[in-house]
Length: 132
Image 1 (cartoon, one colour):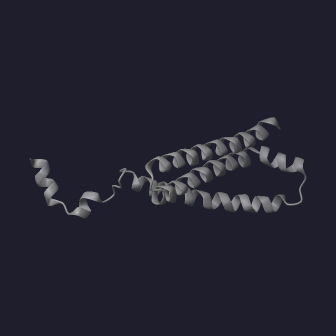
Image 2 (cartoon, one colour):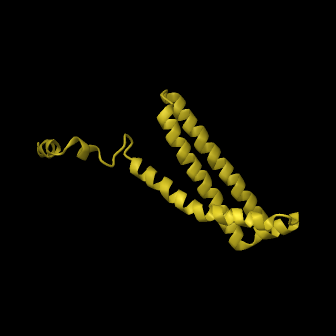
Image 3 (tube, one colour):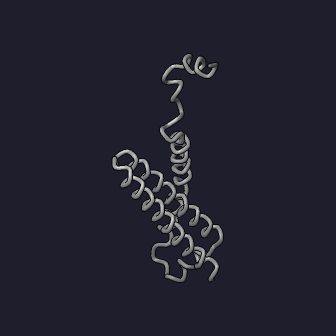
């Protein structure tokens, strides 16, 4: 009975504030912002590095990737990029795919594809870094 009386005292907005249908909307929103902020300096670093590597040989590029700091930053860029992409596509799919089966199937394909591509890219960087 006490639960009903306290529930009745709350406004409709108070009952739903911060809770999406899956009760994870706020976390998802924050993760999008955190990955965006983390990707900004990493992307600037990557673009400037690629400009600096323009005209270098294949071996010089491999040596650049094999540098520990560059390898770590590349792996971080890869993981954050694919995580951010999967989260963004999840929002689009949840908003526009109405059929429940199609929505779940598409989400699984997107998340699985992003995970596999992130692993393949990360593995490639680590393989170069440890081979040289």
